[in-house]
Length: 328
Image 1 (cartoon, one colour):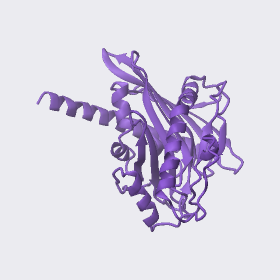
Image 2: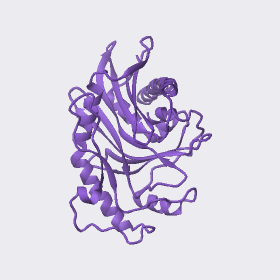
Image 3: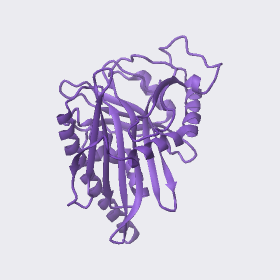
């Protein structure tokens, strides 16, 4: 879904350089050898964007705090490297382990924020699209605000119906190669740097888009998690939020965007006796670019319509493939 929102800045991105998932140490080596840009600020200090408390009202924005990983873990023995140009694998591994513990213990707060956002009234949002004639019943809402850097931050809420059960759809959302295809080949790199958690449902993800026209390349480094909230009602949730990590430091020729809060709430529903999914989507992302509201509205509607339609078509194709394998 990030690929749809990225099209607000550039809708002409071409074929991706597909990339398979790598191990932790393989990515460390890759970072040290990358030649396409110059590292700007490598550091062993992890900075997290933390939602410390779920919003109390529908109009209240999540509380975002910049805080370092050592302070979160209350570790007085944590020391930075004297040479920031060198990446120590042992210190990196320790830092990531602390990161895992932090998010595993605080993921419920992020989930609560997503649930609050997708279920709150649309008072501050403008309805920018509605299609009740199609089977997916896509409806889109948008709001915007200008931050202290004069960038306009857009918030989107989208609802639609997918012709499959929630677990099937969540697996599609978490398939990186499938998402590259569904993005209409707008991504250059999209892969999990690391997975962790009891069910490996936490992913540290890297996403990069190519340079287009006068826009510098944009990339994102974020942590996402998905899980089943209610097995009886078959409700699934997914949330993503940016994280600054020395595994993927900022580069001078790439603009690092920020995912303030992004996620899905998937709930099973019946349509003509078949299991379908009510998709509720919330996204607030800073692409570090100033853009007129009418431009954002036009491209977001155009790209979301194409993305949802491609999702529906891909779901039907995958279901047919599954049936063929079960009943050759």
